[in-house]
View 1 (cartoon, rainbow over the protein chains, first blue to last red):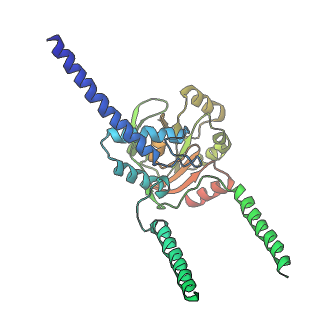
View 2 (spheres, each protein chain N blue to C red; view 1 turned 45 degrees about the vertical axis):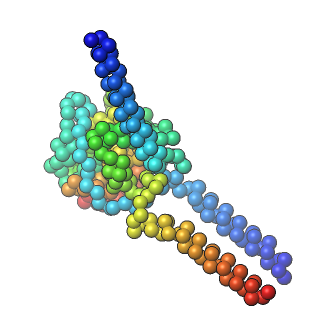
Length: 123
Length: 172
């Protein structure tokens, strides 16, 4: 009987600690994708400012309330705008940001292609 | 000819760069992107400062034309600078000043109010700073002008003469 009790308690411990760990990991992942708005070039996870510390507590609270990652991002975006996310979604405010590298790639490629063709003609 | 133009061009470019960066020094380093201008006030639960009674946000923002929510703390130096403007505004009839005591020690906060006078009609606690996040605030001091449960103006940093007259103009 004692062994059974022991086993049950151990399995419980393992179950709970792993779910705790998962929640903690998710919290870290979320706070790493949040910009600390009052520090320069730091994420909320990296920063120890008052703002970042409050935000960490808030993210933990929201996760406990049952919100998922996307809902938390949407919630904070509503409060602070796209700027708080390091990885902003594709929207009418950010399409230029996302498409610019592709445009540059296409444009650069076109220039190179043109040069190559011209060189070939010369030969 | 070409050799003369190049150094001139260089000097010109660098002086423009210098000018831009020099101007940039005076800007605040908190970048605040444009968000929706009128945002509904958040809903939260907290405790009242003196009585320590539980209070809900919809019990706070009811009955007056205008509300001025001021996030403050006794450890915050700019809060002392803006205090006189809050005292000035507290004389206005149609505006209620609500204080949000941000991550503070109760005794220090109480002493702050005893030493400098209390401009607030009501104060509530924000011990872990999460209510400030609900407001979309950055830190202390920060002030929100509220009308009909909508934030009509947001002031990051301490109040000054100019902002004071703007608030008075808005709440005429």
